[in-house]
Length: 455
Image (tube, rainbow, N blue to C red; front, side, top):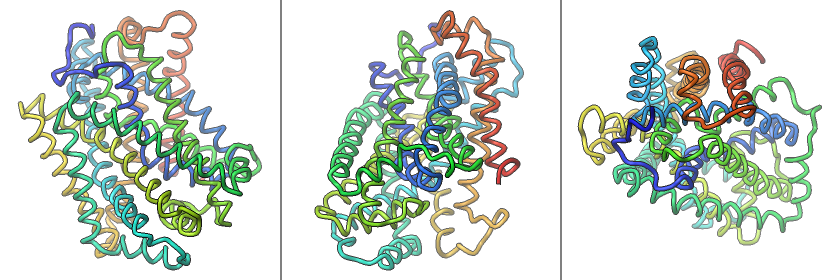
């Protein structure tokens, strides 16, 4: 029983703090950077509808499963899986799920810190007025110059990692909890301010229609698969973060209600980001299907041309930094928790060692964008591209699939019922989804990601 275990690291002071922490983990560059451009590339509203449906039938059931596993074990993902395997005398190979999540989070943090460094750099660029009155070629050159300078990338990578280590080193209540207590409201406030500004722009109606009006003729089969993948990845599933955060969740908190709230808040941020971005894109005659360059090359043009662009551009990239920061602290926490539990380290050395190791691995991503850009390590991919491909396309969907199978098929039904707290029809619906529907959905995401289905 979960009541027989207590977390070595303490627990969240309330269900609401856990919701903010888990939402902070889920809300990252994927919501504010990736979701808008994916919607832009796949016809807008139709993509959004498929994305919302997949959140409900793929993302949410896996999240409930990952939280209940974490709370049942009350330890780092590695030790949680070890304990649950021992509890039920299950196959020892299931311990691999914990290691897979911790390793995936570690690798993601190594390159995520580099991308977050771009956002940190752009806060200063926006505040200095570097975007004001410039042409597209100038913005593109600015971005290329940043990526092409390993020393500047190293500086921002180091600064962002130091910010992340500083929070995690302080522990659950003094560090993680205090960070999300202030960062998450600030993030939502910044997003609301930017959305309010977008509502005053001449392209608001056009941008809103593009984002919310379904055009299924513009949605291809690959677009549907992309929406499925984004729905899974946006909730930070399969990387150990939600599992370790779940281990700090109070025993009396409702896991399904908590998970649903997180999913709604995460989706709200993604939609608000689209509502804030697309009106600006249409107002200034830019392309909504600009791809990954939408944030770092297209939007700076809009900020440079609009009244108050210095202020709002600075706010926007500060928003990106906050979103990346709350995600990064959740990526490093599983490894820190493991070192504290298994090596008897204090929080500070465990955080410094974990962050320092991720920083070192991240150097590969720094140089693969410039001096080692011609060095391919895997089928034409640089280290940066390989790390992204390995985690996004293989490790995360595989981890999510195994979590769904473990929660739905391996854990004793009585233990699942005790943790999840659902009865009757609601339990049967969730249990049916996590046992049958969700594994198929995550499996399709996995096969598409590695190129075995779709184009």
